[in-house]
Length: 196
Image 1 (cartoon, rainbow, N blue to C red):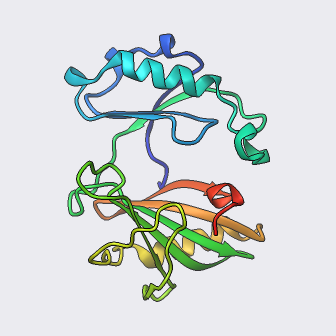
Image 2: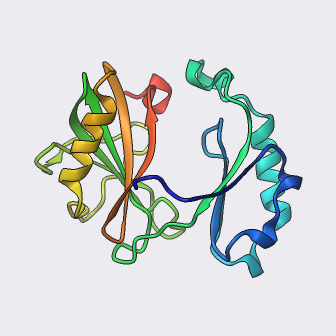
Image 3: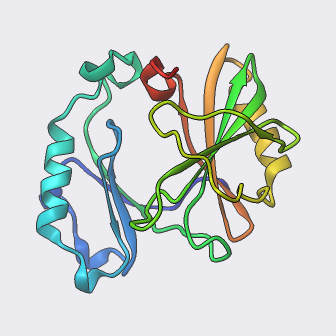
């Protein structure tokens, strides 16, 4: 119930049947970081740009960039998922829970991820949703107006605890879309393990 719907998985860009995909979708590689294409309208979607990004992503082994071993032997593929956007916030906000021995201790809330007019903002909160005086070394902007607490904050904390219970340290990511919680990913090396 918390997984973003998947439309298909392919080993090659040329195998994708774009006619079967809906008007809006997201393409991304399954073994990489930041290789994705967002299609908000198929009529204006550039297949050539998507091909370039996906072919590049398929050739890249992200393990070699920071030696994050979970990436090392993942089979390169392309996945198409449902396009997600929260109507209230007008974006897809990222809720990243830092867990230690299964307990969530801090939340990183990423906003303005797709904005061309505003900088990407990273705001940190404790588990009572109090804003913490932290900045991210690579993304040092806090929001000028701290974002509101997610509607499903308590549910996210419970899910993060369940998913992280077997790990000494893992970041568990969620999205909130129109009142529903969706799972993003589990990250064992936040920022490659090099974040100050």
